[in-house]
Each structure stands twice: as structure tokens, then as C-alpha cells.
Length: 254
Image (cartoon, rainbow, N blue to C red):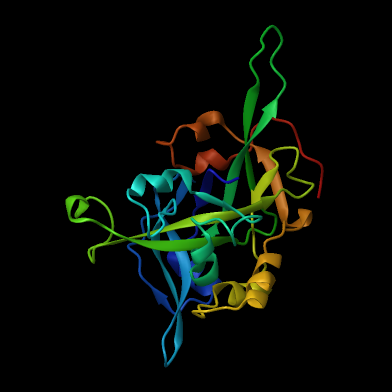
């Protein structure tokens, strides 16, 4: 799964890296502890009859389907499982028509350790996972729009009366990360970006099957993982010290 991640790269850097045509952002600065409900940078392709444009803008993390009665449903929909994304009612429409890339500089998972001597309580060690080459990760994402009712106007959503939200697609962990957690975000290679973002309105079954094949674990050799401070557990902490290496169990080399 993915419950926290790092978004430290500037919109300018991300726009260049992901070949973005338009940036719609107020540049909130780096965040080393992005949590659900946060407004996160998302890359989408918008198409009309004349052209297609790639846009970088902010959506709230936690997908709220168009049919939802209340936006709080998004708190349970920060991740979409690759195995069921094409069939689960909350995600299948977004998978078919509203796919996006959520850029990140790394993510956190918590490795379960054996209880300390004299205790029975298991310890969870926070671990930071990022690309060895330092490049941003391209999480496969889905997005949705939800019409804000009058009674909630001004409390959620954009000025146009719509709440735009997103979720990260997860898959089975690769062998390197499996000792930490059995799930990991889908990290798309650059060769898959255009296909994943393709905004065609009505992809056929063959297209969707091809897209589903993209939702595989990324190779071990892309990643480095190491233990970090338990301060990551505090959602109020957002500084760069959160990704500093601390003494912990080392993972094998990829």
C-alpha cells in the first residue's frame, strides 16, 4: 500500500521531467510527509477536438467517486488495487477514462519487527523507499470529480463547485520490498507514460487489458530502502530530516 509519500521536487522540475504543457499550481513548497486528504500534484492529459495538453495541477488525495453521498468516502480510497481496478465500482470508470500520474520523490512503509525482549508488542520500523538514481517516481493514479452540494460549498472543492480527487494504484511488492510490505505503488516507466495518460473517451476491452498489464511491480534495481526516524509517524512533521537514514535493518542490495 502507500499511506505516506514525499513530494519535494518543484513544479518547475516536474513540468520539465514529465513534459508538461501547463502548470496550475501555487507552489506550496516541499512536503516530506504527504498524508491522505492533502492536495497533491497530479499530471493529467486533457484532450479536445483540436489538441491534447498535459497539465500539472493539485487534486485531493483520496478518491471520491461521482456517485458518493459524502466526500469522507475518500479517506478509505487512497489506494486502488491493480488486481480489481478494472472491475471495482469505485474505480472502474476512472480506470477507463481518468488516469493520471502522481509524482513523488519516495514513499514510506512500515516494516514489522520482532517484539523487543520482555514485551509482546510488535515494533513497526518506518522505512523510506526511493529511486537509486534520484529521479521522481511516476505513481500510476486515478482521478475523479464530485459535485459539491450547496450545504458544503466553500468547505471542500474548487471555486467552480467540483471536488477533484485521486488515488494511487498499488500492486504486489517486488522481491526487494517484500520484507517490508506485501504491496507497493505501481511505478510507471517513462515508456508507459503516454499510454497511461491517454484521455480517449471510450477505450475498448483490448486497450484496458493492455493498460492492466502496465500495473506490475517495478524492478528491484530501481529502488533503495532504509530505516528513518519514527517522527514520520507524526503527520504534523514535514521537514527533510524525515528522510535521513538511521540505524536499522539493512535490506539486501537490489
